[in-house]
Image 1: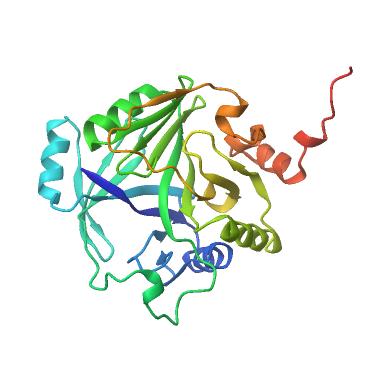
Image 2 (image 1 turned 180 degrees about the vertical axis):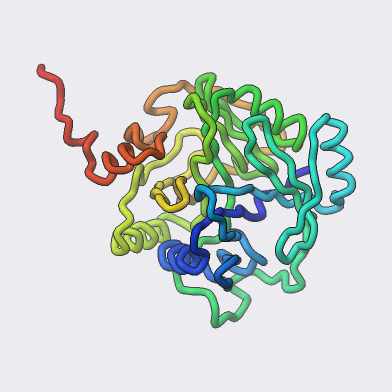
Amino acid sequence: MILRVHHATLRVHDPVEARERWARLHGLSGEGDAERALLRCAYEDFCLELRRDDADPGVEHVAYELRSGVSLAEAAERVAEAGEAFEEVEVPIRGRGLRLSDPDGNRIVLVERVIADDRKPAVARFTDQLPGYHPRRLQHVNYLTADTPRLADWYEGVLGLRVSDWVGDGAVWLHADRDHHVVAFLDKGYAHVHHLAFELTDWGEMRVALDHLAQHGRPLAWGPGRHTMAQNLFAYCRMVEEEMFVELFCDMEQLEPDHQPRHFADDPHGANAWGILPPRSYFRFDAAAIDAEREQLEAQQGLPEG
């Protein structure tokens, strides 16, 4: 039923500030006002909606695009048959969508597939809007949870995704097409959006992106490295303002049509083929963890006595 991630809607206190910040740090472009901004990576209609909200900042919902030929009515019928409640909502540009929630309360919006009028590849187009550095697309989302098996069953049964891989018993990755994953869940004892992931072209563009972040005062929380399952090169930076991380990645594994789920050991090699584990602050969003990450306190603790 699901083709891919279409967009994420973020709650922000100041859409004007947030739009400028996401454009400056991550090469997104778009337009907006004091109430709402729409940003894009390249030629899509939008990949991020920044919505003014006086509540706590964060991810309001993640929207998925349905496969060609699947209507909202058909999606609604499938969701209803699964026993899930939903409601129709307005979606910028797309018009209508269906909103529901997963067992952790993460909001999901489903939108119909729209095929662009101009279907030429990016290199065949002309633009005076896109910056020189920009991601290719918003590609996946990762959540922390306290019940990974329950979430895996729900996304398979309700949305029709398929399990790609497990790491131990507490981490699972699910796919919609040949990309290794479109959503993932990691058991850390509580529910929270962990990161949104933007795809870059290759390792060369990754270097440009990481140098760019460094020059704008955004150090990495983890990486660069290479995930053993999914095989993608990765780097994570914290977006303190929205209480989440952004992953920049490239070279993700493309699955075969007859792919069967695999099980990787929950060890350092399972997380990063190059061997470096993330700091513990990587799984937290409180002020103490953010300060420890900023000051690199974990790296300064020293070795135990030999």
